[in-house]
Image (cartoon, rainbow, N blue to C red; front, side, top):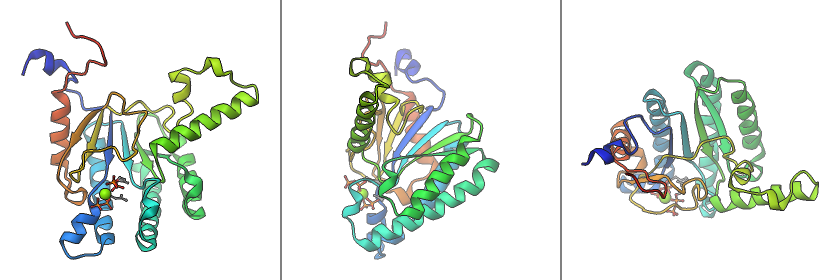
Length: 246
Ligand code: IPE
Ligand code: IPE
Ligand code: MG
């Protein structure tokens, strides 16, 4: 490895890690269990990985929990996922002050069950009172990258109609501020367990220059050692952002 490569992403942990938590269903099916059993274990993996990322100094952790396409699944599976999200949001609300987390949500919350939407908004409000240096968990619920961009475009258009913005003033920075991720730096490292090498509509705008790490490990089996491997992979990347290194 050249020194140049070593200097690439550096030895500091990525500031922002984004994870597509995939493979729960296959994990369960391989054990002869219902898919929901995989989601239950996968949710525990989320807890473990969130604490680990915080401990190694990651400041932002974005997790894909439910996509705009996941409504295609059975009612039982969707309902189970909604209940799990409810439980983990409540837990985070109780623990975030003590354990130095903040929570933020991306996605169209208005299409979630009303009690879940209300809970998510309450958690967001609580997190806004917490210090900026607490690790931010950005939970993507009913999230689609395309949907996020369309909703941002709609909001910008509405501001133009009201006279608060002008179409010709729109640039990338201004547009970013209309996204659900406004104020959150772009992911440095995107991790997809579960063996698939695709984005599945995750962070289409924000991942323009993210480093991608794929592993066959299914999400319920994902461990802190896997994060170490992904971070080591990241540290070897030469991030050029379109430029040329001397
Ligand atoms: C990811 O695991 C969790 C969600 C999409 C909610 P999957 O449920 O997609 O698991 P596989 O990919 O079918 O194994
Ligand atoms: C992406 O996984 C969504 C989440 C992990 C929440 P999917 O399992 O839905 O993606 P595809 O269907 O394999 O592309
Ligand atoms: Mg999947």
